[in-house]
Image 1 (cartoon, protein in one colour):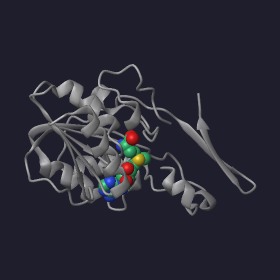
Image 2 (cartoon, rainbow, N blue to C red; image 1 turned 90 degrees about the vertical axis):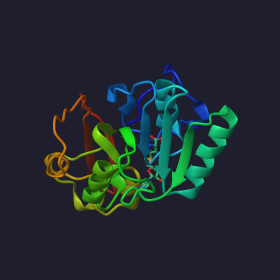
Image 3 (cartoon, rainbow, N blue to C red; image 1 turned 180 degrees about the vertical axis):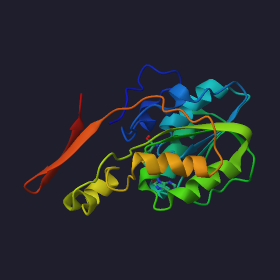
Image 4 (cartoon, rainbow, N blue to C red; image 1 turned 45 degrees about the vertical axis):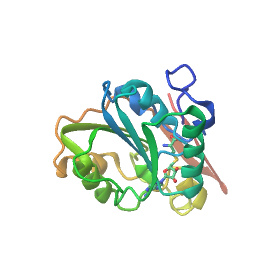
Length: 204
Ligand SMILES: C[S@@+](CC[C@H](N)C(=O)[O-])C[C@H]1O[C@@H](n2cnc3c(N)ncnc32)[C@H](O)[C@@H]1O
């Protein structure tokens, strides 16, 4: 499900674990000097692309709750020698960030994994500056998943069974006070179970 990042400015192969499901920075309208927060930053793939856009005068904060991801991301920062990119360990349902700090929030394939998506949207609102915006790539559902997929641990970790209905997702965003929402790009996947094996593939 991940996009090809290799030609992007700021790309760092060590940060690209192929875990994304889109390219949120493509639509994030990041400007020089912006403060950007990347939710569920993994090894830093989107954070480093964002940093190429904020330049040295901006700042990028990645948040992830998996210590191994934070270690990888910090090792990447150290290798690159950036002093305006930092990774904080924490849960995006309760972000380790004070209010009104971010111009832009990006996130790639993370909210589907979070049990309380409403809490994350409320936190996005809290940490964005007034007039700030976000660009999120995520998995949503249209139709219901069979029980065999809903209950499969690998389908949860694979960003499928924790996803919620697209309309519910969009309503949550609106209910929390966001306006001017646009769906920039959609990719469709068809999931089906054949006997005991579940497969998901791109659909034309
Ligand atoms: C599918 S990976 C995507 C990583 C990264 N965005 C990328 O595209 O390479 C999901 C990431 O979200 C993190 N994550 C999941 N739930 C989280 C939560 N509640 N708070 C913070 N991070 C979370 C995981 O640790 C993992 O690094």
